[in-house]
Image (cartoon, rainbow, N blue to C red; front, side, top):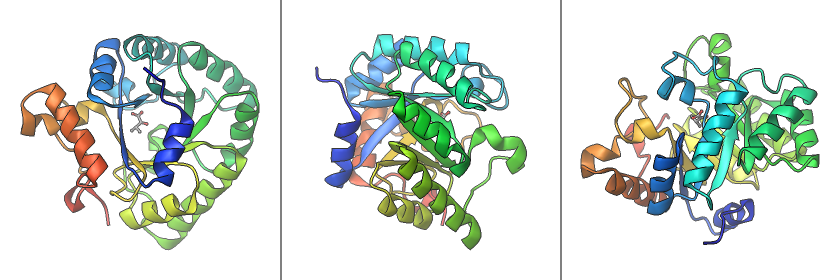
Amino acid sequence: MKPTTLADLRQLKKEKRKFATITAYDASFAHLFAEQGINVMLIGDSLGMTVQGFDSTLPVTIEDMSYHTRSVRAGAPHSFLIADMPFMSYATAEQSFDNAATLMRSGANMVKIEGGDWLCDTVTLLAERAVPVCGHLGLTPQSVNLLSGYKVQGRDAPGAQKLLNDAIALEKAGMQLLVLECVPTELAQRVTEALEIPVIGIGAGNMTDGQILVMHDALGITARAPKFAKNFLKETGNIRDAIRLYIEQVESGAYPDQAHSFN
Ligand code: KIV
């Protein structure tokens, strides 16, 4: 089987074909997701909440991320894997080199970092050293204490403009993929149209190039799921059909609908 690459994702954007991605933390689920047709997975630091039971992603370490990245790689040898750089692991350029290297050696194809244009230098330095970078804008969970909670971002004009400017600056700096979390559909559409690189939304409406869901939300495991999350297992009754339904609804644009978006 041919491995999925960044070039494949750029081609999907060019052809205006939407794609589904999901978080994965272990080999068994990663294998199941790949088997059903998900070619891109994120080893998210959301594992601090979904797997480790903390109330935020802040306690997650680079060792945790490396362990789970290895596990997911073992289950999905051909998938394109994005691994989250955890809180404070990219505070300086030197830290970001060492920590990105750890994740790439664990099997990641790309690392993800949260934040705006202050990360431009880091993005450039990593890209120059052969580490592809995925940005993360909008609701950035590592900043939960600054943001005073998990809230929709970019609702007012200055906030929306700042987010758009950050996205453009990061793309210029060398960012190859962008995750947009919890922003109004209209803003996500503006960003998606302004960038050449693929944009993956979560709680960002159905106008982005791709979608991502935390696997526990897609399978109805999360006790208090966010508004944008949909329990695909409820409709299907088994995990494989649930994942296939998720893929179908993302590819057709049926998910997320109005009820699972912010306007
Ligand atoms: O950590 C994570 O799972 C994420 C997604 C919410 C995109 O960053």
